[in-house]
Length: 299
Image (cartoon, rainbow, N blue to C red; front, side, top):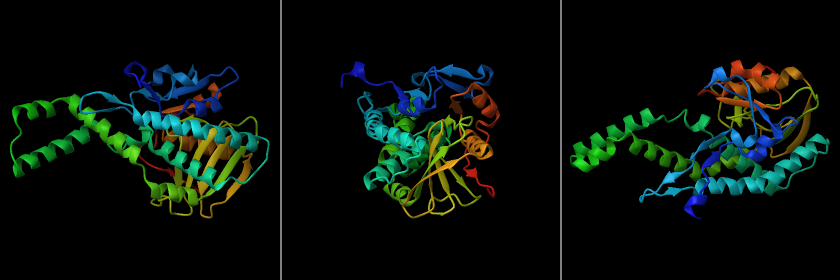
C-alpha cells in the first residue's frame, strides 16, 4: 500500500456499529467526559470514536506499519453482515440458531472489541509507568553488563522513544490475542437481548463490551459473569453462563435498560446514543468507575 494511502483515523469502535445508534438524521449525540464544557454534541459516526494512528507501529526504519488497523478492518467487513442479520432477526422477533462458525466469529469479535479500545488498555499501562519500569530495567542492565553509551543515553532520554515503544508493545499485545479467552466466550450462552419498548434505547460507549460481575468474581469462567455488547440502539449481545446456546429474548423494563446504560457509561470516557436527552441523562455517570469492572446487584 502506498504511503499516502495509509489509514490515519483508526476507529476503535467501527463505523458500521456506530451507524446502528444514530438518530433519523444519521447523527450521534455524544458526550466526552474529558471535555465536559462542550456538553452533548452531534457528530456523524465518521467523526467520533477514533484516534489518529491508534494501532500504528513504528518499524526499525521509522516507517509506519498499519497492519493491525487493516486486520481490524478486514474482521469488521466479515462480521458486519452477521451483526446486521442478528439485529434484523431480533427486531422481527425471529429467533434462529446460529451456525457454530457464526458463534465463533461473534466470540472473536467480542473479544477484540473488548480488548482493543483505549479505555481498556490504557488503564493498565500509562506512559509514565511504562517509562519508569523501562528506566529501571536499563539501570539493571547497566549494573549487570555495561554502561549505556552516549548515543543510547540520548535515545532513551527522549519522550518520543518511550512513547513509540509503548505504542509498539500495546499493538503487539492486542495483535497476539488470547485464544483461551475466545474459547471461553464461545462456550458461554449467547443471549440476544432486544428492547421491546420503543421509548428506550441502549447507548454505545468507548468501552462497548463490558463485564457485569459480583465483587471479586470477574473471571469469565465464573458462571454468573455477564459480558454485554450492545450492537444497536435496541439489540445487545449478552454472553453469560455455560452451554453454548443461542437464546433470543426481550426486555421491556425501562429500569433494567437504564441500569445497563449506567454500567456502560461508568467504564467509558465517551458515550453516544440516538437521543440528546438520553446521552445528557447519562453524562454524570461517564467514567465514574474507570479501572473497575461493573457490579451486579440482586436483579
